[in-house]
Length: 188
Length: 188
DNA sequence: ACTTTATTATACCGAACGGTATAATGGGTT
DNA sequence: AACCCATTATACCGTTCGGTATAATAAAGT
Image 1 (spheres, rainbow over the protein chains, first blue to last red):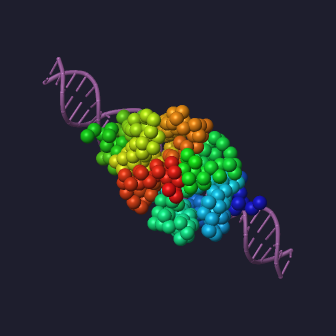
Image 2 (spheres, rainbow over the protein chains, first blue to last red; image 1 turned 120 degrees about the vertical axis):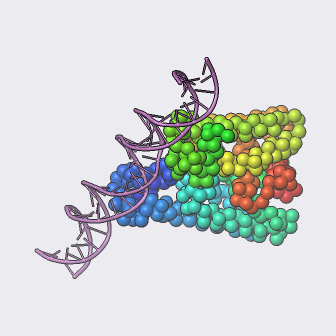
Image 3 (tube, helix red, strand yellow; image 1 turned 135 degrees about the vertical axis):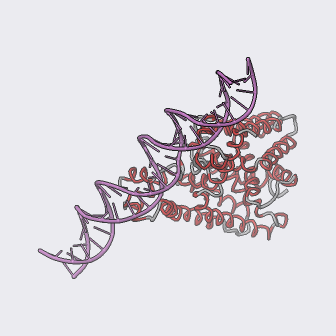
């Protein structure tokens, strides 16, 4: 395993637990067992390390969501696939999803938020376009794709939040419940 | 206006835009037009300033939610009142709600998260108990109060997130839609 | 054996960090 | 006028911040 990946892995662990600002470069390189110039050899700056980390991880998330959210006429099925993709990714990349969440909601002018914004926009676009496509078959959805995308993602992240706090597992049952509730509400 | 409040207001503005870690004590006192010892006279530390700020603002939010979420037999009505209380507070305390959101999702061992955790727990307890009470009238809700609390709060915060990004206003129509969608799904 | 090239270690930079010691203020009370 | 006391200003503490200059090292190619 090369030092680039070791550095990114260590940075990911530290960032996900205490945040980008609170973790110093010194601590990262000590954890990785290398020295500072090594870090600056691979990444030009602390921010460069974060960007590389996002490129490596967030692109995987986006690819998974993009693939899962292809609409083929069955909205429930597509939402379930998408929700499942989120849950699977969050389970397999727990640290990264924690960091991703914290960056997504971080203050608008913070370094972390500026770094993740493009990926957030992209994520939102993917979900929005899903609801736009679905609105062609279900006219009563029309014109609300932004709200639906935000609401659906909010529901998913609420469940992942519970998972990250060890409240429960992200089973297929939770996938079903999340989507079913989104589609039909809590009563049915 | 006394310097305590001026300091808290300035800190709030700065924290909400760039985050607790990224804002130095020096910048806070300069913005407030005072000097460092003044800050340390009123608050023992930077963290003490944050705690005082949370005491002042978050307690208002909790009080508003607590009052709005009293269940009196009509779940839809109670959820609408609660949602409206969130929206009203977020509209009137934009900066604080932005900071509150970012702290709520901040890394689990970050200073910000440790500071807001008790308020987060309390908030969650208030919403949970609402669904527990409602389950006495609606048996099919039973045993899922955690998921409902998280999901409802997630939906609310998703809308407030859109509002904070200037996507739209938090009108009564959005209150109705948010609650209605939570209760009956996106189709009806 | 020699050179090249990628990678690493040591030591340091100025600036900003959170926090504090000391003493000068200035307004109200007696 | 004398005093008190809350509040403030100046100047500084040691530490850590992100970042870098210089050179040693080690492996690979010729």
